Structure formats: structure tokens, C-alpha cells
Image (cartoon, rainbow, N blue to C red; front, side, top):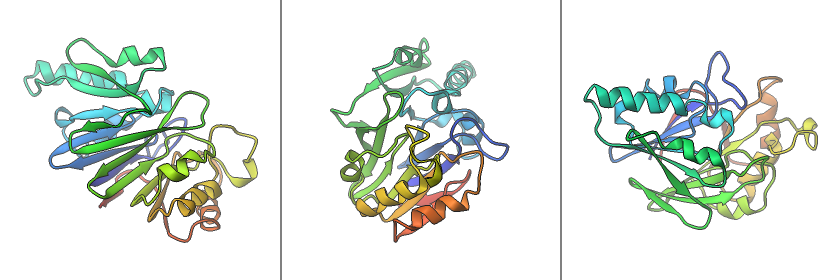
Length: 243
């Protein structure tokens, strides 16, 4: 699996990065994971937009779906130009009325996902786990053979995620708040909690994403290292990892 990180921020894009998102590629198949503000521009640095095979969304907060409308326009334009004939599937849970917006005539089609059933998207098998957030949100595990990438999406501490992320080759965890903010901001993890999740689940590598727009990000790494003995990195636009 080739993993290309597209954005690192929560809330809104910065002047150096879109919001949290990444691209997965395998066997010529490309899957966009979350599509918040700035993501559509960034992903075109790595693939032609008409070549995108599918998109999957963890939840419907703006920092994870803001560019969906533009993605739908892209599919329309590329179809009109004759560069694309297939409808783009956009996968999302059906516990929000916003699911209906994923279908746009014959250019994009919403496909339901749930925690009860894994899905096969191209070469990827994807399992889901509900997170603890202010709206319904699904963590995701992407597997091919015995290799796995786990993405927490947005969540505060959730014991279910420990088992869900067990033995992940890569754990992509949100780290939206600093330890000193614990208890003040709900629905998100501290750097220390991200490290704890990686340690308890025996993840091989930890990538911190959905970062705050303030403070010293190095503090998040320091917090995570207090809990996790493995490799820890920040996400940044253009970072590529292959497993």
C-alpha cells in the first residue's frame, strides 16, 4: 500500500496544508480518505483527478467534507471532457442526512458504510469502529493481506480502538489537543493519548494528524513519546509511506 498524506490540520486548512486527509494507492487503484478544505487541490499533485477511483468519509464535519462539492464538479467536468465515464463512489455512513448529498446525478454516487460490516473497495478490505466524537464518526482499518493501516478519524479516548488498532503497521491518530487541555475540549485526543493508543495496540508506527493551529507541535511528540516506545512522526502534506 502506498500512503500519501495530503493534509494535517483539524478545523480549517493552514497556509501550508489542507485539513487531515490521505490518499491510498495499490494495484493501480486510488482511494481518497476524507475530503476537507484544500484537499482537492493537494491530491492533484499526485494523481490526475479523473483517475480517482473512490472516496471514503469518516464523518460529515466540514473539515472532512468541505471539498466534496468541488469533487463532484470535477467529476462532472472530466465526464464532459470525455476523460471519465465511470461514476465516482463516495462512501459514508447513513446516520446523517448529509449522506444524501454524496449522490450527484450520474457523476457521484453515495454508498453506505456501517460498523457492522466491512467493505471491499478495490484491493482494500476496510473495517470500521465507532469513535467518541460530537457526531457519529467511524475509525477505519485498511488491510491488504496481513498489512494494515488504522485511521482513528476524530475521537476522544475510546477503549474499543485499542483492539481495533491491534498490530497495525501504521496507526494514523488524531492529536488535536495538548495534555494541559485534557477535559476542556471534548471529542479529541491529546498527544499522550495517541501514544497510549499506539502502545496498547502494539502499533509499529504512529503518525499524528488533525493537529491544532496553535502551540508548539513538538510538545505533542513529547507527550506521545511518554506513552509509546515506537516510531512517531507528524503528518505533513506530501509525506509518503509504503508498506
